[in-house]
Length: 149
Image (cartoon, rainbow, N blue to C red; front, side, top):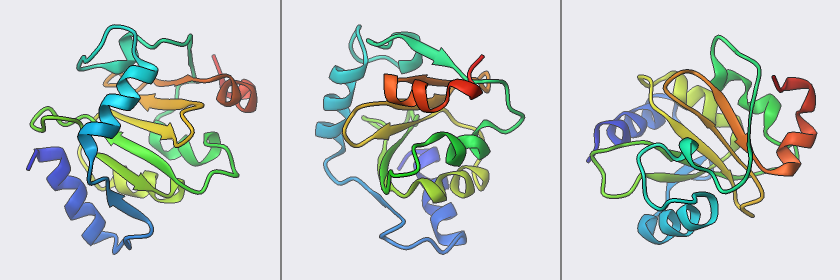
């Protein structure tokens, strides 16, 4: 098990999150490759945010970007995919999760890059190692135009 995946498993226990709050996707390879093909131009790469198919946009600078996610993710979204960068895994782990638990979960872990992905693949939101919050998808851009740089 990768380091980040193990940290998340521990954070889920610490926070007493339930299966309906967050659960690891079982067929991660298939979903990972589907999302990769949909969002990335140049194929598999470590940092997806360097080569999105759609034009990316940057959010304002926040001290703790992950704490802002709940204000950025569309209110009508009940579940998203949370993909975390864990280089020790063959494919980045992907969790089916409620947007409301993401900040708590990330706050319990050491820093890592992550991607929050709409289940209809309409938008993607990520935080990179430079603490930049980056988005793709017109719906996300329109809903958050007051939060962009």
